[in-house]
Image 1 (cartoon, rainbow, N blue to C red):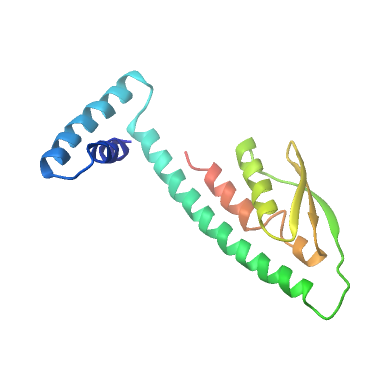
Image 2: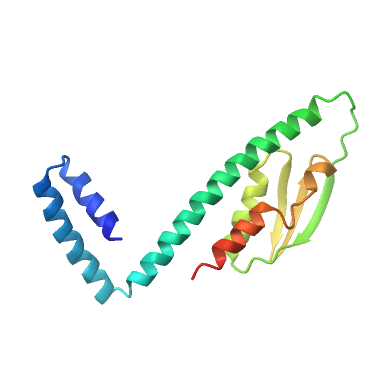
Amino acid sequence: MFVIFLVLWIVFNGCFTWEIFWFGVAIAACMYAFICKFMDFSFQKDMIWTKRSLLLLRYLVILIVEIIRANIAAMKLLFSEKNAVEPILIRFRTSLQTKAARVLLANSITLTPGTITVSLEGDELVVHCLDKTLAEGLADGIFAKELERLEKVK
């Protein structure tokens, strides 16, 4: 949070000088002390949010890689010589504890080509897959593992 305050100070000033920087350090330190004292914030919470942000960035990179892989798999499926596409509707339960993590999992599945999350009720997801080969590893795939890791940060 201190770094965010400092960066905002520099951005709002519109230019960078060492005088603005050191004055910004003092202002950011005062603001950080204020939120720690009066707004139930602490250095430990700041570290937790930093770890979560890094894990979310990692998750975003994994999501982009999986979207590219799913695009390639869907194109191979659609342009293949065989015309036997076997769509499938699967149900599975996830072990994710928070609603936000379950929604992020459902949205990540929908973002990957060839799969659409039809419903999310509690911890049960219903996913439509373009082909049964695209359904492999949905329940315990990389998205679920990364989100479980994100939930464990405390």
